[in-house]
Length: 303
Image (cartoon, rainbow, N blue to C red; front, side, top):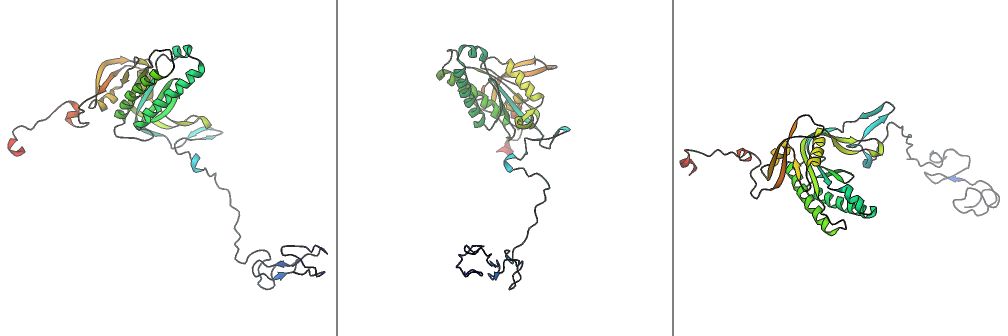
């Protein structure tokens, strides 16, 4: 294109002539007609200079609410924090959950005997084994407290046989801990767990404030499970009454009777887990209660 002032050949895209400095015509973005620099609209097609004819001007979005990315959507783990304090959202969920507390016996003594770095490595290896046992049976590791583990069966995902899953996970945890004690460097004494398991109603949801908030459960069921764990001897698994009632078709127990647990009013029926039954009974019906109702006087009909 030649300059309209001096005739110098101007390359495409130049707004000014490099020889005389004259402003060059602007091509219409719609039809391509060369418009004078001071034209607002194309004299050929009427389109605004520099704007395509079919372009649609979109109004600026009006901010209405804060959009939370999907990865941070507070579906289960959020409270709304304001100047008035904390207002719980509708993530709270009341449900029946089997709570498992597992604790390493002699942790304080072991910490005195081992170097802190060795102790940390042992704890991490132990937590790895315990977590694998919980997840293998569909449980959820709520948190680690010192040398203890809190696991949930029935939250956030529920199964029909969650109490039975919790017991099988407990036996697996004890076996894994024993194997770890055989190969890990420590004082030479066996590594043993004592475990408490209890089933009952809890409220699940986000507990804590800000970044410390996490999915957890609260209720007396959790407290009772922790008291059962404290009562259990090394290598023992103690369970509450409801857990026993829901799993006695598949496991053998030794009853310890009514036991007064620290901080609780009245006694709690406690049972010591023995082992899985070689021939499990039905989970429902009279057989689950150790009863039977044979047909009498119906031989002909049965034949």
